Image (cartoon, rainbow, N blue to C red; front, side):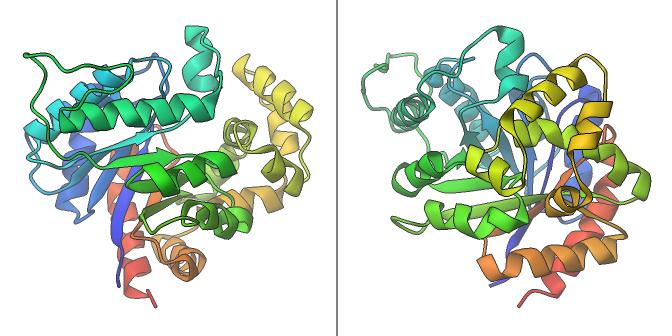
Length: 316
């Protein structure tokens, strides 16, 4: 079966530009758009609410929010509000959160497996009008409605939790060398919807610019993945701190060409599309997508749409 197509990006353009990007993605025939949630930045929920009105078919997703910065019941009510505005097109991804999201809020990622499991229970209860530990519905609660819940994670425990407790899994920023194992955890108990998004750039300058930024992704990846890529967690921590202070040298030196190729597709839309199909078709995901590594995602939508068309045309 030919998969659905999607695009993910971090909302660091202007709010108006982001909404226009979602509209452009729908017009280009892309099936899903997902926004990252990294703490005190432009709020992805508000942006999807704004995008619900001028769109009619594209599915709207958060990938991913965390259980620490907001109470899960409030996250659920916000997502359900967008679901109402969009006539049922909302998708919600939950994960443990990384330092980009939690660090500025001075929040610790304590007991992440338990925190995500609790969040899923509460979000599900709100969407079904049920009572669970941590939430009791009241008369003015939003009306229940179906809300697809995804877990977005790279580690074993949370992906196995997805296999028992979520509707789907959002696999983003997973190196190609460990993708099969990661999806195996997610599918270990029962079938579920699988969305896989691969980082992509369409020119060599952007490809090289992505090199140091991958430190953020790898710092929040499982230690087993770090070791498999030959990375020391202490080196990653020091490089991330330096990058946060504006010094790119340590991060650039840490990410080898092999690691860069493992995490980022690059080239023309034709090349990216063929590479995406080759990389993902053995894993049979329900949605294939590109994570656009740019501060101007709107300008990339025609390229993304062309690459995704190539990928699905070559699907086998």
